[in-house]
Image (cartoon, rainbow, N blue to C red; front, side):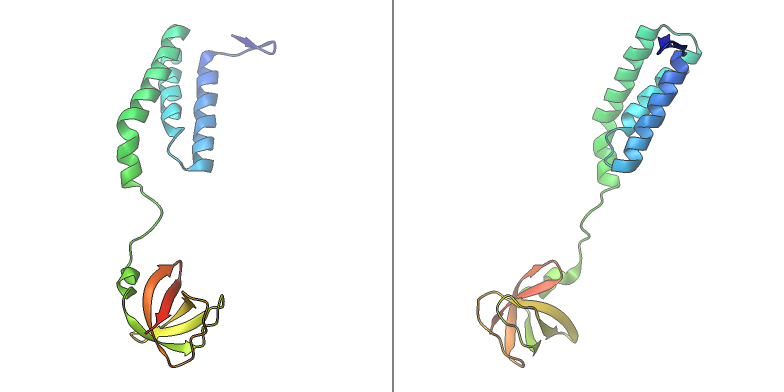
Length: 148
């Protein structure tokens, strides 16, 4: 095969595609192109065995699609990234004491079970220091509280 006037074997093309797919996968980490890299590698092996180009393309597509359809779900579940479940949700409904005044749209602090947390008031009212509050939600690392 000739590309830009240079004679290139299919083995080089398949190997280059496999590397490109691997680079894309390394950048995105989305488990989307790794399957195509495996398909390109299978086609690379066939090209080394002098299998016709049409068969290489068919095998590339078949291997890529089969791996994508049948194994992606398994790997996504095993390599699940994102939120870690913690016990912080157990704080919802707990009572705490304000250690730093909470003003409207301003972060204050609340102490619960010996730990100090950043807190925001749910309503647009000031919650004074030493007042008891109830945790009604958690947004990020901030407790959302209401006066008790």
